Image (cartoon, rainbow, N blue to C red; front, top):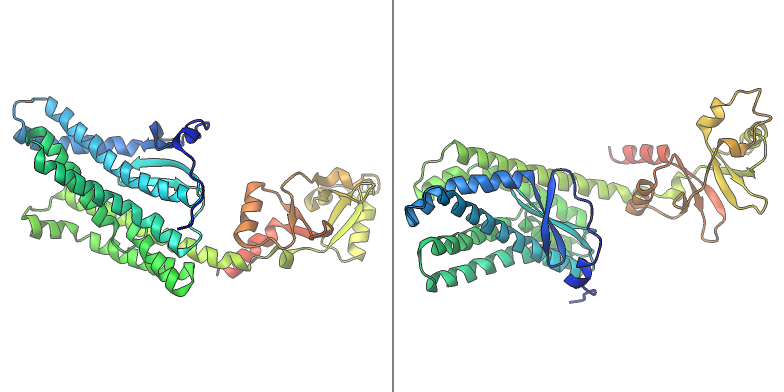
Length: 389
């Protein structure tokens, strides 16, 4: 398969660490990627330690309070299984040229922060499937080790490792977003229809169905293991279902947004613009603009290069009796890098550009660098709302 150069861990280690988001803690690096944990992960670790303590006591009696420490070790082992799963996503993402910012462990699992999304259905498929396959691979290795290693506490840890990875691998293969199986389904529909948005919508609806079925998980556990579901089981099922439902819904909303974005073309939203000398009085600049039926005014220097965009609100705030004496440059925002955009910019690229440098207006230029018009953020917002209804 085609691949981009993958930065080695040593190269990544030399990079300056990214800022840690609030509520997160950096605990180290794995394969050159920052590993973060949230506050909720510590709650999960304590819960696992508490629930596993009686099991540890059965396997290794007489540990006393140390059984909770052993339970905490099992929680760390579980975190390692999530880390391996997410690391598989990170490696495949970097192989396709997508920088990986971090791996985050939280109460419901983990998340790999990737800069940019898959550019094809094949990339989506590969980047998604490797996580569950890695978990199932670890489960197999742990099971084989369990056949040769002694029982007791070591056997419990190895058995937990095998069982946890099996559950993680199988569960993540369920065909619904935001699970990896949902991304696999999205890739398959995307590849068959050549339509990424359609793939996301199908996988999103499937994710909602998976969320509803997750609510039945305690009943399934009762039938399979003959263990009566308690309040904790039902609470966890509701929490997991809510997580899947909200993730599926967010993915569908994002897909509809991407379907709207291609119709946002800067050229079509451009305001007719009048270029005036920077030292021309406001009154005269406004008169010329009205005469030319221009919706915006750009100031230029003596060589005709654009240097600023006249702010309409600043003009309105200038008293009429002062306008003949105040130069247009006094009510113009200077053009800085990022405020000049190509007239053919559109879609996601347009949104990224105006998000990168927020401003009320941007200068649009053609391929030769000549002034084409001015793009107002208000016009972009209005067009988006109209198309998104």
